[in-house]
Length: 292
Image 1 (cartoon, rainbow, N blue to C red):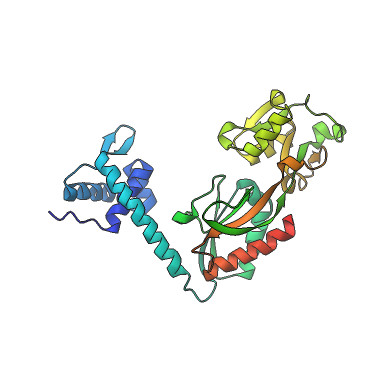
Image 2: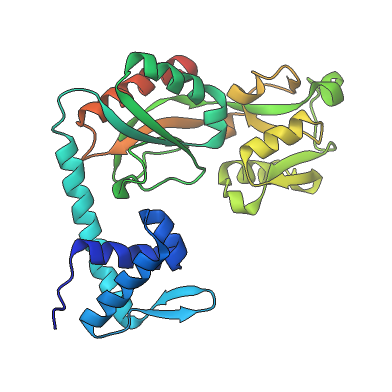
């Protein structure tokens, strides 16, 4: 029996395990459901063991499958490392670059900066992913991340391009005559839902004893922003959002405890890649003009 596995076998097995179904794995790999099914059956027959339990909720790895997945993860890391090193041999800034940032930053200054990048680096093809989770650059889910953070995430390299200041905002129509008041605790507030994992805001609201006044919670910053614009209550928002909207009024000065650094990050193996380096330099320069 030929039980040797190649990278394609491991890649398919890993994708099925991550996605939990043959259909989702097929979409991720750009092939048909039947192709994925045949590949899984073929691998199981060659190994002489069952890799997945078929359940009503999807495909779950067996103990043998977990062992194969451990090796697949190691192989994936080696493949991505080779790709990162090889891409560093480019001679001109061209090709695809995948950027990830938060939805609010993309809605704010990032969209304009990314649009201008096309004029500066016309041979770069951008893919921009709006996500409030830090995509794993080490696994090539993104090449560059633009993120608010109190510190540089481990295994990534980059620099802080400035500070994101925040302040309390309300609808000018509903709360405009209250701007400048010393106390706002008796007014309705908008806050982050638990699923948003917004510890900076959560801790500040707890310290200010504002949770009893929370009228609505949202799982995205843009959702909170929309609620404030429609008069649902007060909310602490980044100044790049609040100050740019004429329907909002800033209720006071910036809140020091809510300020955080903004980082432009990439993987250490990618930082000297010509196209990555060119995009990082462009983003860094433009963002410093906004946040410095």
